[in-house]
Every structure is written in structure tokens, then in C-alpha cells.
Image 1 (cartoon, one colour):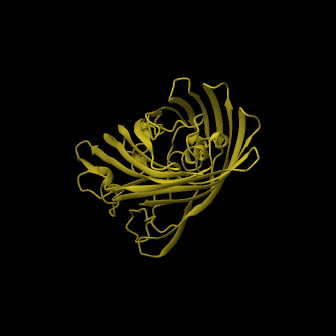
Image 2 (image 1 turned 180 degrees about the vertical axis):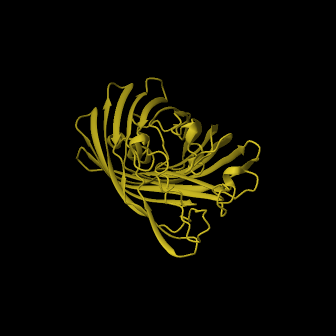
Image 3 (image 1 turned 45 degrees about the vertical axis):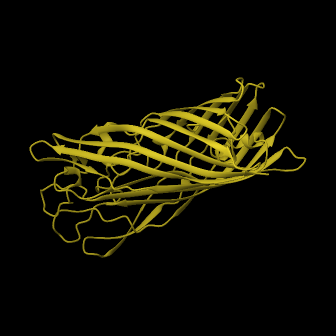
Length: 394
């Protein structure tokens, strides 16, 4: 459905993710589980006039995001309880060092001779544990709340969020590795409302607070191998969603969501530029608006098909392309196609395929010392996502 779920309750996973109030509208209690297999195709091209130019593909491979959603209607009660364990965010890049692509040049160990970042490896994953309560205040109106306990990890190599060091006295400081980290905890909450206007129309809205994370700590080392500890503050953004759905066509459901994601006010994501010591303040993302449109059609008693389209504004300014090589989440258009097949009276198989269309951003190569004249760096990305799961109703 392209993520259109705020006013279109189809299953526990979508309800807990986008609007906890819609748990009350599910026809039965259920347990759903599945996974998204994510295969990004990303590359970086860079050049410095008169020096070098090159293109490099990231060997990102496939990543998996698990999803589990449980919803239970209490007997003779307007209350529905639920629990979600949802993969909510992440990215991954894996670029080798290059002798032709300037931004991936090895880090310099010679004073006065600029280098690149060398190999770039980054990985982020965030998982929400979300106990949920939905209360049907009437036959047509429900509210819901879901406190979220989040577990997250961010790996970055080189670790540009800390100051480069010159422990070997070469006069050319270099960034250390940021692989030596561990999961950090965070917390937030989501509230929502859902209203059945009439048999054809439904509306919904939800607010997900920022997720306030612990500082991420990194066990790293200086150029001489001596131990160092670095830390950085990453949060997840506030998200405001509204939605409407229409079921006035036989066997068909149409849903539309609009969403605002407040990256610019989020620690680690909205901060911009380098500190005086050469450490990166943040990724410099803007707040964005998004739109999701989904259509569901009941083909037979056992088969349902779905399709969706999503548009998101690009959060990354062109001029900050260079500092977002490892976090290239700038895609804008997504299409999805999938469906559900009833294997037995109470068990359905769910599958989907999503494609994020190729998109690129271009800016200058920037360093803690400033912008390199006559330079350019372009990040290009597309993504394939395959999803499969099982829903058991009772």
C-alpha cells in the first residue's frame, strides 16, 4: 500500500507502525510476522579538475528488517492491546578506497597534501518495541497510544563525527575507525486517532514523538593504536501523519496518507557543518513532506492484491552530498506491488515488492578545512525491497 495506513487498518504491523488507534478497527485478533529484505544499489562519483575523477559502487549487499505485530481484542471490552517489534530505520554503505575517485582517496599522511576519506563503511539499524493500547470510545471513534522502546546501532568508518588525530606527529591528522560500538537504547511514543465518518469514508491522524537515544559510544584508537573513546548523539525524528481512506467501491479500498518528518530539529541529523576540531556536527538534513497512495482489491475470497506509490522530498541538500556519502537516503519515488493469499481460514501469506527509483544529488567536496575548489561529488541510489510474512488470526 506504499505505506498508506493511517486511516486504512489492514493488519497489526501497519496499525502499530503508523496509527495505534486503528487496532480497534481490525476485525479479529491476530499475530503477524515477516521481514523486509533490502538491496540498495548506490554509487559515488567525484572529481577535482586537473587532478582526478572516478566512479565507485558500494558493495552494500542485502540487509533484513524484521517485523512482528500482535493485536488482541479483550472480551466484552472496548480495549484492544497489541505489541510490535518493528524495524523502523536504517542504511548501509560499503565503499572501498580508490586511487582514482578523489573522495575515496586514502586519508593523507603527508602535510599539505589533501586526502579523501579512504574506504567508507556505514551501517545504521533501529528496532522499536511498541506495547500498544487502542480504545474504541464509540462504534466510529477510537484513540490509541504506543510507548516505544528503541534499540539502535550506528557504525561509521572513518568516524568523522569525532576529531581527526595526529598521534604520529606527521602533521596530517586522520579520522579513526568507528566500528567498535554497541547498541544504544532510546524511548519515545506515538498517539493516534481514527474516525469512521460513514460506511465509505475514514480519517485518521497520528503523532510520533522524537525518539531520544542514549549517546552512541565508540571504542576506537589513535594513529599509534592507543585507545580512545568517542561518543555522538543521534536521535530519531518527530513524525506527524494524517490519512483518509475510501471503501465506497465494491471489493476496493483506496488510502492516502500525508506525512511530515522533522529531521532538521533532530540531534545528529539536523546539525550542519564541521566543528573547529574537524569533527562533523551532523548530517544537515531538512524536514520533509511525504505522500503515500495505496489501493487494495479483493479478487477472490482467498486472494487480495495491493499496489502503492510513495513520494518523499529529499532531506539532503545538494551542498552536503559529500558528508552524506555513507547515509545516502535521498530517494524520492517508490512503487510497490503485493498481495495476500488465504492459506487456511485463519492463516494468510503476505508478499510484496517495492522499488525506489534511481535518484542522485551533486555538490562540492567539502572538508573540515573548507570546500575544495573545482570539485564535484555525486551520490546515486536506487533500492529493491522484497517482503514476505504470515498473519494468523484468531
